[in-house]
Image (cartoon, rainbow, N blue to C red; front, top):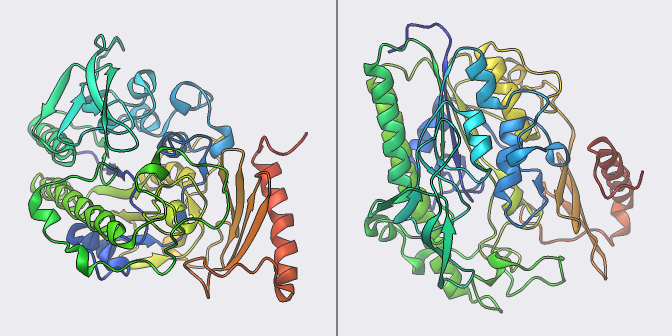
Length: 458
């Protein structure tokens, strides 16, 4: 157990888990007792967003933004890790922290070795078989093993041979359990060692990303016949959004409501199983006496449509794909409270530094959220820029949201999120909303210029 007064940090990032999949945040159809406990013990940011992506693998830039503190158009360098200042874990390591990482890392070997001094059961990839995860431990010199055959999944669920740089397989252990095991072992080691440094520990899960498989006990908890089809379900999207890759081929067109019930049931089961593994980690933190002195942060890289708006994936700018949870628990954090400030992934870096008493690099683009704990009216920002590749841009305010599609036909949508959280009533052609429309278009251009959006001509 550390005798250092500085708080530890435990950062957990799920894969594909959207905001409305935590029971305590309003979903009565899912069981997440451990995440519910974090909601009660800390502060939930109810309007947290992934800014978007410049590629189909949305998780890559999302995780880069978390680790770099930069927005989408300013992440650079190997793995999207900034070269002008330390990464988030690196900043803690430079301040004397023991740094450890486990789980999914889609940003390359070099970036992982730069971020963490220790690592176990690391999955260098985007997706795979949850029951046969090819993993490796951190290699200090960065010289990872030679490639070995690996069977991955294609978009339609079939299997194709690939090669990845891994040195072992965790056959028969589900990915969520595998990564929780690694984190529990790290915590036990930390408790038993003579190392008095505080720790920065990172666990990134593969769940609930497809293929959505988990122990039958959890699958049996959700009867697809009792699953509600979302109100914004559509057999297919009404117009071309400019992208139709792997995720959109996970189910046939037109979307079948009965098949979607199964997708949603499996999605919920994966999240409940993941929640149980998070509970194991939190229990171990309690057992070693570090729970009260640890800042716990939980978020996800991005959300997922699973049938909403006729879409299956996250390569879009609707709320279901960009709106994600952010839970903060620990010393000096508001208890059992919620904040509705507009926040994004690049705010996590300065917030964790601020909570731990570390200096935040001046080049960081994010805003610390610490002032909101004492002052719910503290200003963070009034609008967020959202983007996907070169085909979509959006501006999200506290009430209204404007999405522009740069496709051959072009399209613009305007939503009043106070009255229409499901984004089904497009107001862009309603003259009574012309002032909001024009204001948001101007705000979008301003945000694009500030963010160095490559779509804005110099």
